[in-house]
Image 1: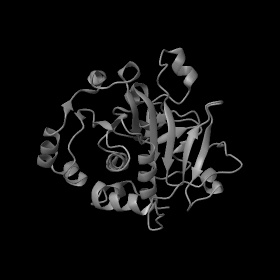
Image 2 (image 1 turned 120 degrees about the vertical axis):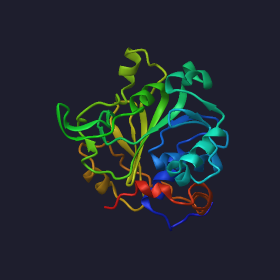
Image 3 (image 1 turned 90 degrees about the vertical axis):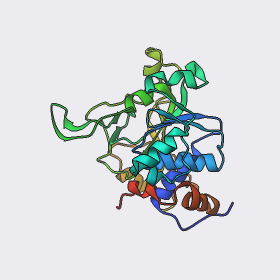
Length: 270
């Protein structure tokens, strides 16, 4: 497959997210995280045609033959698309639809406002919860996703020290600690396993649960990644370069998976 030089950081995010997906898996993605929804589309059109996904907390395998922007902005198009879905469920009832350990979903996508060195996420408030500087709409299903999906994939459109903090201001979803999960009976749930940003792909070292660099994108550096993180990352001596989007991936992304470029709602300039 040929390498493509004409792509943006948000294109790299989408392609990297899609590559985290395996065929025959099941996943959850919310409505208001466009890059994740596009990544699901891209994966289904490339290497994971049998991916099953639970969309927006209600719809199972909706038909996205209409472009995503229209579905997200036009009520009639949304209803028409959803009417072709294979099923409908409340999040609390999702277990009956999926196979796997304890009938859980293979993975879920989240986009946290804050994430800390322990993998805790915050989508609730910034500052003192009693007197917050900023209040977000809420965690929605984020807390459920972390504890009902076998693994969680996070993405952050702009990596900086406001988002990557030593400790989150409020724990909307509990972090990556496998020991903590085992102690409360969540043996099959890994929490956040990978984080895709505009600079790098990050993960947690299973030996010590520290956030570490898996790869850096070809337009960033190790120094830039660390400078935009509010705590010390574990950095290998020889950090790989993230595989850039191929010509084939970009063609499918631009012409079929996301022709109206709703992924660019996630674009953040530096």
